[in-house]
Image 1 (cartoon, rainbow, N blue to C red):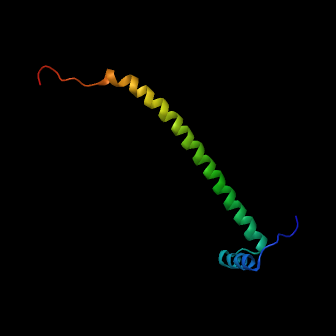
Image 2 (cartoon, rainbow, N blue to C red; image 1 turned 30 degrees about the vertical axis):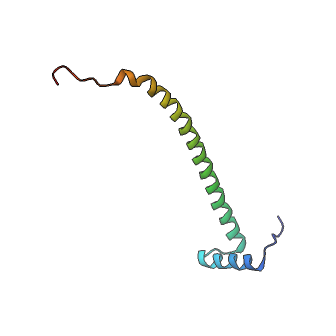
Length: 80
């Protein structure tokens, strides 16, 4: 792959991170950043899938609870 055009400011940011993180090269910083972004993207996708699943199950549970609720109402016993 060829070179990536970055501004002077971005190049300075990359160099600063390279030194702070002890990464041997600027391309190593980019690779590390890509790995982090990919992991975050996968985690966010999983989070959305879980939320969607919970939403679907919650609707079904709500309907089931509505059907079961009348049968589960506690009644006072005669001795109370």
